[in-house]
Length: 463
Image (cartoon, rainbow, N blue to C red; front, side, top):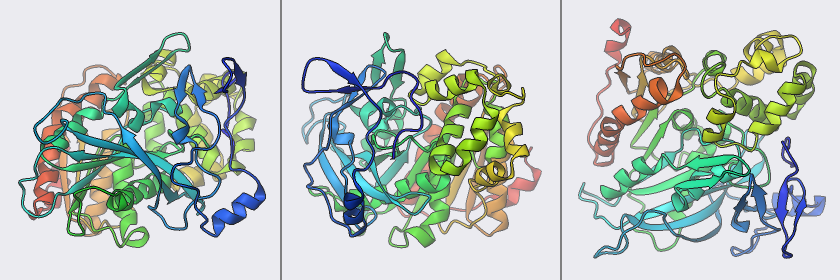
């Protein structure tokens, strides 16, 4: 499949010193697709096609999915050493560890095979928690929709800039990754469907795509050669914001999609569990670009929605949706701060109102709702009470919904003052930093085998 849109001529590197314009390459030929269905796998070293250039940053050809994919979810398609951008020499190897870039097979929300990229980091530090070294899959928070924003690339280049093309990618999740590695916990990072991998647009906040990508990252890490993971390694999930939605979804989907993946505990920070309520929070915020990423992702996952979207979006909206499709989170904050999506529609209504008007769009958005299934593992939900970008109320409601189903839920409100309406870096991002130590401590306890005690009994009296 091709990319949904292009904000400007896309650049694809050739072997000559010049560049030619083009769009993202899709899966090739009907015959190749038939082979994919049969599970014929490309050579592990293959990286098909020319490198894609996204906003002036070249995406390594490693990220070009092959024309055929393995038959098994979590199967590693290819892997290669990944040099960490922050690394120091140590007695037992480089600190904090040794990284491997990987591409693995998953299944998207339409039931089709898809290639997902990510990374695995083997820690240099010893695990002193008892038992085999555990694994945590980190689901990144919002990185953007351009392939240059992928979290695995940010491990290699924590700060990627191209001022001419207007992009900045910051690896803010590296802090949590390195804190886990310092504890001796192995970490796998997923880039999600279509972020990094160059065959399609990133399906931003699609709960099935994200949940599957997280669970299949566990399977992929287990099969990588040369790791210290064993069949008895406990597994945890960590995510905040978009990542919190991804881990929450993975916790719900695990019993049916990945019964072979037993989870010790799941942290879901500030999860966008109800997009109907999240869209108004994003609209007009410092990260209004995320509304565009949501619409782009919906159209990528459900192509039948595109004509409906086109019937509402005006020229300014089309340009904005195309522009944000290759942006990172920093670009979005700088390019569309506090933008109102009603300026993107012919009718002068917000994208949230479009959702309410159109049954097909409403159904697609409602299908992303998290909280309708009971997780089989202990979960910790945390949210800043002043968060108005990914609204506190809907995140707390996720904990309430799970509690009502008998799940083992630890709910933690993060009390910080309102430091400015819809300013993402304060009301939404500060709780991530404030709560991170507690979140990692809770997750480490689960990896050590300690029992989690639900505090669902507190929820009715919390604000």
